[in-house]
Length: 134
View 1 (tube, rainbow, N blue to C red):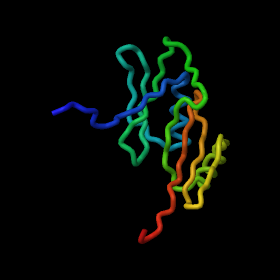
View 2: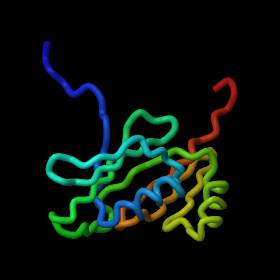
View 3: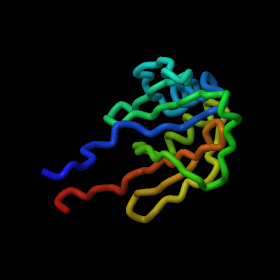
View 4: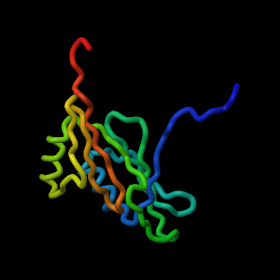
């Protein structure tokens, strides 16, 4: 039987300010902190999860490897939201705005971006309206 990767477990983003970044993901995206620990090499690790996802996001602080510099359009995480309009109101209540969008389509779907600490982008996706019987 050939060996294969079975399941994506987590994605790591290294950050400069671990607590500021954890607070952003918890407050803005309302992710749950699942666990935190120190790795054998000394990295501080925090694992976060979206309510309906199995995959985790691992935030890593490892200052001895130098500061993090995220180039534009390098990578992003994408999250589904029920309503970009309502999420925009949530952002405004936190003193934040979309960095790009929202772009809405005729089918009710759309997307927008926000900037997380360190310059990582987060895409928010509103799924198209599903018509009954289609």
